[in-house]
Image (cartoon, rainbow, N blue to C red; front, side):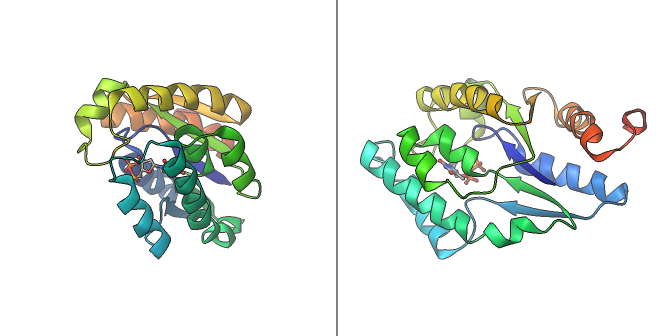
Amino acid sequence: MYIVFEGIDGSGKSTQIQLLKEWLEANGLSVETFVEPTDSEVGKLIREVLQRPNAQTEEVQKTLALLFAADRMLLMDKLEDESKIIISDRSFISSLAYQEPVEWVEVLNKYAKKPDLIILLDLDVAKSVSRTSGEDTFENEEFLARVRGNYLNIVKNYEHQIINANNGVNKVSSDIKKAVAPYLGICPDCIR
Ligand code: TYD
């Protein structure tokens, strides 16, 4: 099963993925996690471009979409391991939410692996901005408000669960466990 965590910057994906992984392993399941952008050479270039002031212009967004798709290609085989639960911090769904134009992003990601389940950590934009460093050009309120709206529309096309990420870490974690349990045959009453 391929579970993808999505959400605007600062929504707590990495913390929550770690907590979910530990809990699934405690339930006897085998889990592997991945992060996009990766730490490949392409991933490093992406992080550098994200800090440029022009990262939101159409030209750079198109280039970023290409780079994200290339970086994603490097992961493709690893996501196919059916013997494990694969949890990814971001996927091509991030490209659909952050990059434009949408037709461009769709073409570039035609062969990207589709998630079996999206966990969307939905966070208020003001909270997101206060949690992030502001170093990346994307970390501003107007842009992230658009991304948040995009996410809420995009996930409708996929199996998904929307989690309120404005709550504390423990509440968010237990909401995620409750959302994931039915897909994995874990007894919902056993969730603490
Ligand atoms: P990251 O450094 O992981 O930020 P965070 O920990 O806040 O998620 O991700 C870098 C940025 O890359 C983040 O602002 C989202 C953006 N991004 C895209 O714009 N498109 C993509 O396809 C992906 C995977 C990430």
